[in-house]
Image (cartoon, rainbow over all chains, first blue to last red; front, side):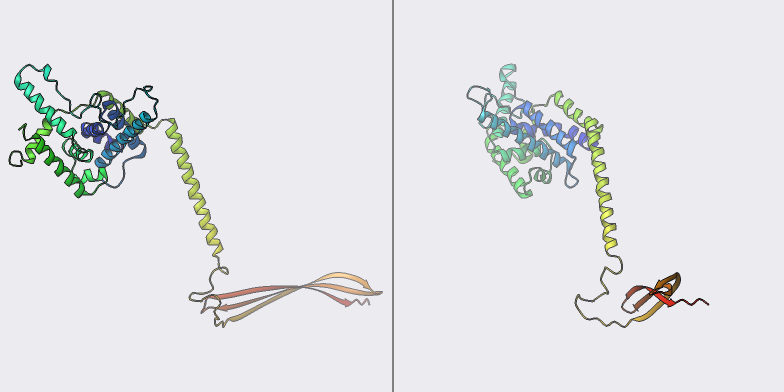
Length: 181
Length: 156
């Protein structure tokens, strides 16, 4: 079991982290989610039925949702101005982190580099504006390399739903990015 | 719109944007967790030993229950014959076998109304077997008898 989990982690560490970051919007919480998920998988093992990779993605996704929910509850129950936690349910642009690395145009020298950075920013914003369910499917497909069947297992959704979400996500992105291309 | 950009172009464009990378610390934490799972610590070891003992106890209990159940189903307590409904009259044509044996033991001479009486103890057993081979019915009973026989004693 350990070798299976290790292989999954090595092959999918970036994809798993990106899925978690897409949900938590905070790199440290995303890393916590990946760690928590693998700790649970080590204790409970991989489900004997189904795809182990999809199972690992489901575990990370659930851990990220749990962490996000707990943080939301803490921010709701915290006294005003006391805990200093920002409510992550609100998409606070100042503290939320994109799944993309992001380039600061001011750090680049040439106009061409600045244009490339601007294009990346537009892509990033377009992906960030997708509905959560569509963005999750897109992240798993593009950055996790999962098949629609694996994504359907990981999200516990019908295959047709997952495929149509991906289709809609691509269509929205095409609309947004047509100007850039 | 689709004419401007097809799916493959869009996907490769999205893939070309650099992603936020996880830290080496996350790798260390997950690898540590995997290593822990491979070599169980004392707590996990004791937990496994405890689980194994509990499983053994459950198996022993199960075996004892099966043995007990089989004893209850011993001949004479189980169903009489196949296809016989409870309360239904059945034909019973057994072969009757009787055995008797007895012994006589002198118990000495006692005085009854100024008359000497010789006393004997007769022990007898009567065993009756009713066997119906066709219906696989077998009834057996044993009747023990203890009789005291007294005869006048004559001294010549």
